[in-house]
Length: 38
Image (cartoon, rainbow, N blue to C red; front, side):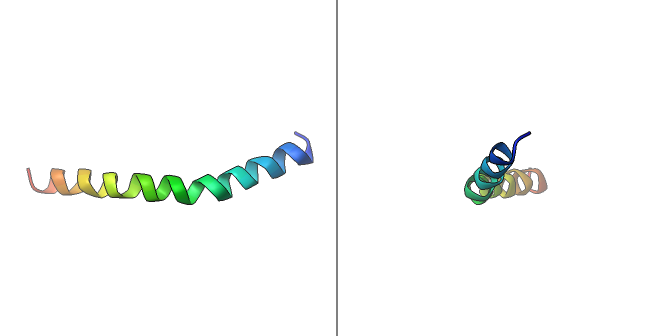
């Protein structure tokens, strides 16, 4: 891989990582709550 591709990948993870976590964590918490309280 070239340096440009590697930097682009790192930038993409830095930008979309937090967005993905914010979108995914509430759903994961809801699933855990649903399993705990059937």
